Image 1 (cartoon, rainbow, N blue to C red):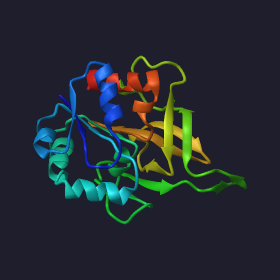
Image 2: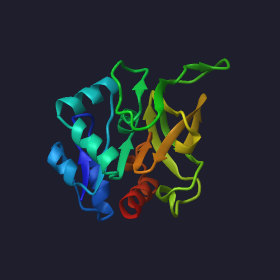
Image 3: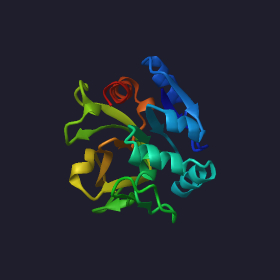
Length: 205
């Protein structure tokens, strides 16, 4: 069973709908006991970093998440804000993140080399895959995903970086370390490309 974690940080029904389309047994839950029994976990999210961390704490989910991700090595996929929360900290807030990946979250600069970049980075973009991964098995060439974010992830270690993109500055659009995976884009809004990514996460991890 795949558990999509509900911590009141965004509409997650579209993720569940996509999982149903690929035939994955899944449910939305805010209960620690469901997280502790899940075969795989998805941590979604939209909105502000501190809001997300506060909601996880208020829901009493941090101990269960820590056990599954770090101790049990349960496959867990962070999406958008969910991926950012896996990092150490964000320039958007003051609260520490989960700290599962050695990375920080930074705001996009509005001007780079005299060129103006509207913030947020929004729309479809082709991702550059930089290391082999089960997540990208049998991908179409030039796989495109839907982005909407004002802050971007920067990993400390190149070995953790799975995908890169540029928007004024180069940023890490996906990371993977062992069982911990994060993607900045929204696979549930990315049609056949997102469907393939979620299928690979469900079937190959």
